[in-house]
Image (cartoon, rainbow over all chains, first blue to last red; front, side, top):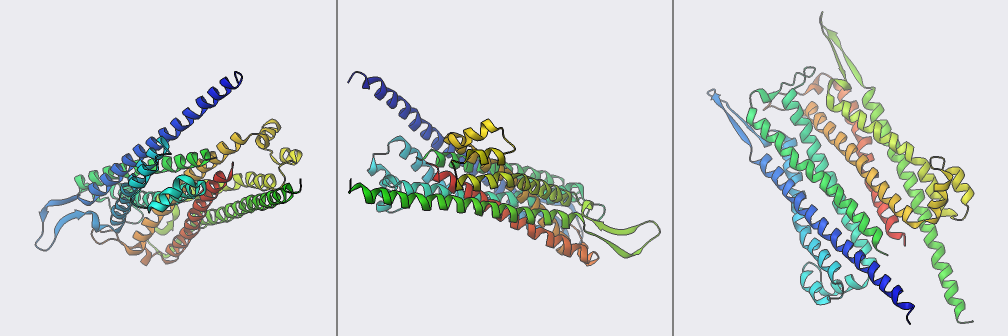
Length: 216
Length: 216
């Protein structure tokens, strides 16, 4: 009986940091999601609210620049809006993950928190390992689709912003930023939040992959 | 002793399809990689070789359109080139995966095939499970970076191609496709291979995630 003591102690020690790492990863995922949500929402709002009216106008035309003058910017706003809505929607699931990693045995708490799924499913969730694995893979799929949407929106907008700043001599597309100065500054700035969101979503997918590899 | 018979048989049965699924996934990954390689390479080549010279010219200017007139198209060619080079480079690893899933015990074959790693590492590879898991996560990371690069290139080019076709009234950017007709057709077509590549890379990441979840 004495010989078994240190082995049991050793097992207890290796199990506790493991659960701790799981919880740390769940909290990290939650923080990344909040940051990505703030970034994409800020991008969408700053692009959508930007407009500039030039101080001179003719009888028929007022010179005014808005985001929806260019279809690419409309796509950028929609993409950022969709991704930030998904991130907001995913926050309760993220909290659920933190709670689950803290105390897996408290079933009643899970059922109360898991408002989007039926109570029956919530019980299965804690019992069935296969459910969890397919859940992680679902999460990777959805996050990847969101990443694709956000990357497409951000880089298409970046291509147009570049054109607005520099113009193109060969195609006779003139740089509009010489007239619409503050408009161009705002749309350039709104790209930052979107690209930060892209990096954070990539980290989230990696985190899901690491979490997946730890389920044994 | 008799009671153990069916259990052993059952275990044997469940192990054989499991290895079969692993091998099927490895072959599927290989096919996806070849298709993505063809798609991205075709995109890069068709964009890079496109040019159109208009039949009329003045004393000083010849009207000629090439991909490097627009920086976005140069980025598109570079992005597709980098991704297709990565996919070509990853094919030997993919073959190695198929072989490994077929016969894990034939060490000598692994060492011969695994020309990019030392023989010592190849032996560790087959023995050490931790190596495999970090390997899958590495693969997801790299594939994700390639996916980001390809999506950015393809959607930025798509934004410019859209502008070339439709132009924009508010910014006075005229549709150049009215003059450069066949040039526009070629650059529009070259986007297809790139977007197919994006979808295939997404499937590859999912496949890696599923493979990761099966390592126990």
